[in-house]
Every structure is written in structure tokens, then in C-alpha cells.
Length: 190
Image (cartoon, rainbow, N blue to C red; front, side, top):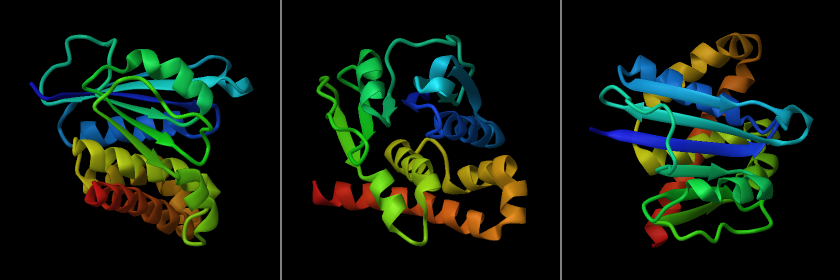
């Protein structure tokens, strides 16, 4: 059975739960089995926000998992809190422009992306879409879903905002493409 276990973590307000919702909506629309467990708590007051997602081709028997296939870490506290979900087969993605420490847990691969910096400096993007850059990286790293699935899910989640401000659709789609491009470029160097 093909099953991808994803942990997303960052500070409250970084869009961790938004990415998770888009992922599971895209998986559902693509005919996959999906599971999303948000970790709500003090993140609204500056705590770490975590989301656990699974996307599979067959029924997901276990709602919880102890080790993830891909772990997204968007802050130093997220790194500290989520290293427990990493094993030698995990891939870690972290934002090098936000995190001052690098994940040091033994794993298959560590991918550092300057998502926040790129979003802030690129006029075709904007600070609020840095999490969508990370979503593009995740999509390229896992190939668990098609780009069209993610875009359809984004339309469902953000369509009203996109219709009210069409430039938001462009920025979000540019950010998604940027994340895919950044990982492809990074992998080409290896």
C-alpha cells in the first residue's frame, strides 16, 4: 500500500493548518484516502502549530503515526518539537530564512529552502505566500499528488478570496511553482 505520512509544524499564523487542509482536500478530490489531524492549542498565542496528514491509495488503518515520511519545520521551535517524528527514512524540509538552527536528527534527506526570504523579496509573490512555496517543495519532494490536484484544492479553499482579488491567485500559483522549481534546482546540484 502506498501511504505518505506528513508532519507540518510552525508558529501559529504561518499557515501550517492551511497547507494541511489544501493537501487533504487535494488528496480527497484525487480519489485517495486522506486523514488530517490538526494540533490546536496555544498556537494562536504564539505556540507551535502542528498538523498530521496521511495520503494513501488504500484505507488508512492507523490514524496516528510515530514517524513521518516528510516533516516540514518552519521555525526553531518546530524543529525542536518535531525531531521525534523523524527516522532514517524521513525527509525534512525547513525554512533556512526563518530557522536559526538546522535539524540534526539522522534522516534520509534534509532540504533547506529560503521560502520566507524569497516570498518577501520577490515582487511576484509576497510575504503571505511563503507557506505555499513550502507546499510546492512538499509536492515536488513526495509526488504524492499532481499539481492540478493542489490547484483545484486551492480554488476550493481560497476561491472566494481569489475572485475578490485576482492577484492573490497569481501570487499563490507563482509561489507553488516557485517551490517546485527551487527543489528541482536544488536536486540538480546534487
